[in-house]
Length: 152
Image 1: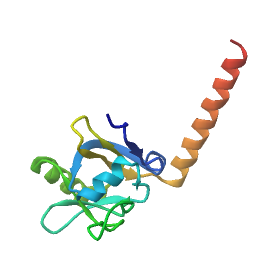
Image 2: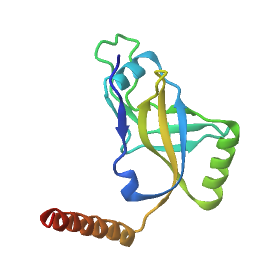
Image 3: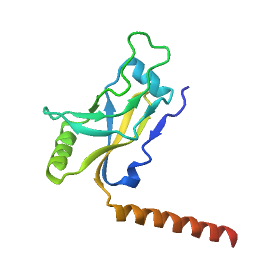
């Protein structure tokens, strides 16, 4: 029985406004999936982009080299292909080209069948005042919870 792998992009919800979510498969080699199962991956600075043939790739995703890998080991910051339905790919490509939105990964996980999946989101970048408002809301919620805890 393997442990539950759930690697999240914590900066994504602060820097972007999430509009739509998708779950995509990833094309990986053997040493890459072994490193992910050891929780040796990071998606904090990564983003997704289309190539000229309409295929979606994740860029800047870091998967550390497998400790016991030989000369078959992978490159840590390689570009990896994402697997989605053709209909979903066309819709995402149209949204990115027309409205200037971006595609960012939210979390990397292993499903019940043992396959690595990447939850991606169609997102719009937040402005500075939106980020300040998010911080203010978080602080207000924290203060309210403190007050409620005192008077219970």
